[in-house]
Amino acid sequence: MNQRNYQKELEKLLELFQTQHRTPRLFLHSCCAPCSSYVLEYLAPFFEITVFYYNPNISGEPEYRKRVEEQKRLISIYNRENKGHPISILEGDYEPSCFYDAVKGLEKLGEGSERCFRCFDLRLRETVRLAKEGDFDYFGTTLTISPLKNAGKLNEIGFSLEQEFGIPWLPSDFKKKNGYKRSVELSAQYELYRQDFCGCAFSKAEKSVLPKQENRLTNAEE
Image (cartoon, rainbow, N blue to C red; front, side, top):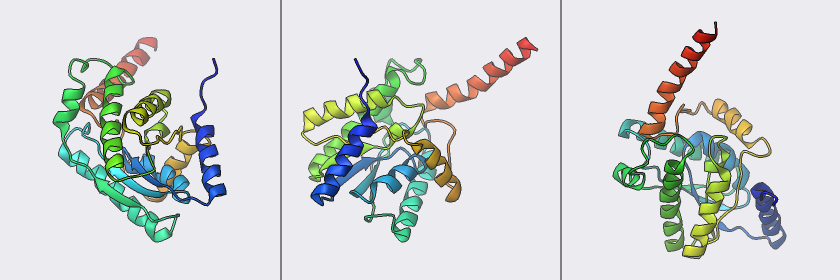
């Protein structure tokens, strides 16, 4: 069975909007400013976007604050530069206890495991709930731009929530068409804070262990 191409599905939707001269309203979950940089540049000409910054997985309020302020700064820059339709932002509650409850029992699993999928569901479920309340046309996420995130699983969760809540999911695989590369370029251009771990305490711990393991392996080979 052929794997779905979510990027092509998105492109067909954007072509349809242009044909119909439509500008739908998109409630877009964002994980961070760097990941959203390309996504907003790409989608702002087609949608009226409200960025929803909801990331209770981030470990430590100082880290959370740093990331959310960078998100706000980037949106302010884009609105001044007129990248497309004006972009709004809604900051969700910072509630780490919700994250820890969602991944309880899965703490020892690694990056890319069911632990991450539970985190995806937590953040996207709150996104679609508010999208429905706000009568948005679509909901989506910037998470699929990351080479470390499972775009197939994110879209699977998104389509499942679409069925549950009745709000259309915006299919995506933003890393395609050099999307991730462009996000790196934009991050450098605007001097965005680029974190070296996804945000949760578990990924931070794994990040600190992996280099040590790699060094041990390198030394053993010498």
